[in-house]
Image (cartoon, rainbow over all chains, first blue to last red; front, top):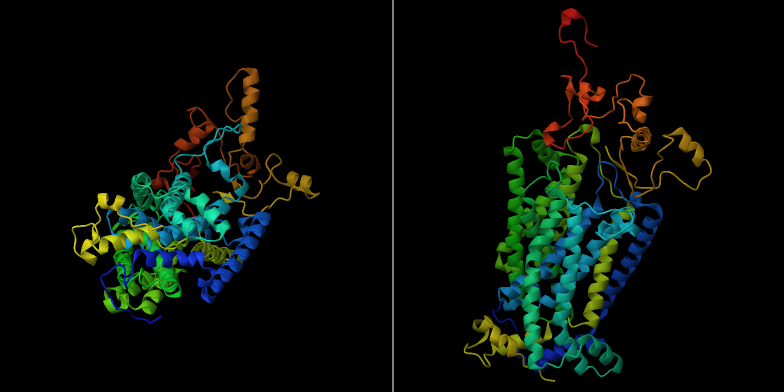
Length: 478
Length: 129
């Protein structure tokens, strides 16, 4: 992997035909020899950490959540931090697949599939934390308003209940959207696979897709509709997650700034994770023709833009706590900066305020090693942001009698590392069994780039799709 | 103040369970893990009084319900009763000028309010304790 690659406006590099794209994408799934040592290492490490998480969860179910560092002023600890962090990471997938689709951004085509998979797996990691944090996870169904003999309904004024609906809607819509987009590609895999078992599995999953014009017509309208459903979710899910804090009457939490600032932070963290995965995977599977430096450059720019919004949020928090003249708000900010968790605040400013400024330079945006390192800073920074918000406010509220300190235990760490393992395990499992790049959309993009059937001339200029061409425009060659 | 039972603090299977139960509030034991502990204002005593009153066909009398903390308090500093009844002891206490609500400005409208300590700001009348 050369650190720096040339920037080119073409979204597909090299000399590609429909057949080469098809073979390249399907080959990763159909040819088991295409997976090399990096795949095995990531998958195995992920699997090991997943086992660790299993042990932590078993012990937690036996003993109770007191094995975590949570205590009485700090009732939320790493569990809610990790929850918000993972949910945020998922947002990039939805943004890429839904908003960029509606905005007709062709550069989404090669990254949307695995970004959506990332969303699903991140939500799967996130969902574990509030579920276990209820204290009695076996009673978790009580969170749903179902008719019962206990005469019990959840409190609809509680943002925690809104969370239940927000997250379950998000997970459902994301899963359906992802699966729908997979159907034409599954059909392609069905047609190309020689192994009868694979053929059967892919055939069942493709749900009888034959590539008929009527199929495409229905597919396109369903896909656009789901994109329309997902678009508000990009904004609503993390807004609702932010309400967990903003609705509570606690200094540092009771802020109207939270929803936009959380959403921007989510997209920011999400793109960092997409890049963290895309940079090595495109090198290992030699997908540089599809995930080009142009894609990476644009993702870095999105990261820079959302990072600036997040940093502006920090400045606003500082300014408004002073401007409020409220002793609790001012003191809370003082505790954030210079209190027992001051180190976390300044680390946060370094990771989310200073390090992303390097992305202004095109040379750094196209330097894969530098960009990868910046992404790690961003991920750490976004984790620290939630740490600072949650821990400082909980342990420094109005009355000094209810102050405290939060110290994580090995079970907190095990749980967090375990979800990272789960995420890695699922992600690399996905790379092996499903096409990581949207095969038919790439072929369609090639069709439009080469100007076939369209009034446009060549390459980058033919990027605005129009819907009519979009429907009929796939040169599927079975 | 709320307290969450992060662990199973009361072992319901252990033999001396009955004794510990007597040693603490006999009607309410610590709940199992995963449940919030919060003052219920002795809901079991309120229920008992309500049932008695209903049987006799009368409203609950002022002072009929005595909360456990009130009963145990040696200085009698806790008053409990019906705030809606203007003639009740609690309503009278709440009307006193030294009655205050902790963090009133947060507008959470807590039922529990406090009486400030009576101070003697005039040094001529004696030393403040």
